[in-house]
Length: 126
Image (cartoon, rainbow, N blue to C red):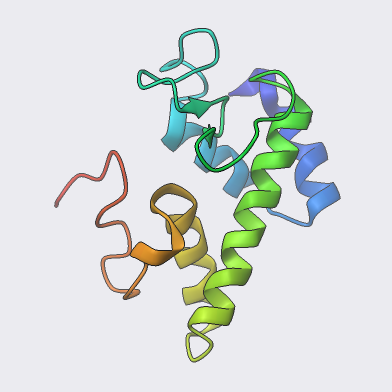
């Protein structure tokens, strides 16, 4: 993850997103790129460090580039905004956490803020 620190920091600053959130998504989605082959996941649908899904988005930039991380962060911000619009009675914190979960599983699968990670990939029941 250290080799992406400056890119993550730049994007976080530009998009007003905590770099730790961006790094957390990179860690969760690809283990800092260690789960990727030629920048793609095992299905071929997920692209890059933050796994932009080519079925729903046109990936931008190289898989480990600032352009890719910017695009993915913009997608994340869009999901947070969608959750806020869909579930306006939720607190800002609940919307933020739910937006992060939606980044992985989609807005339509966010129905409750309890156990928000249920139905996300790599979820481990505790």
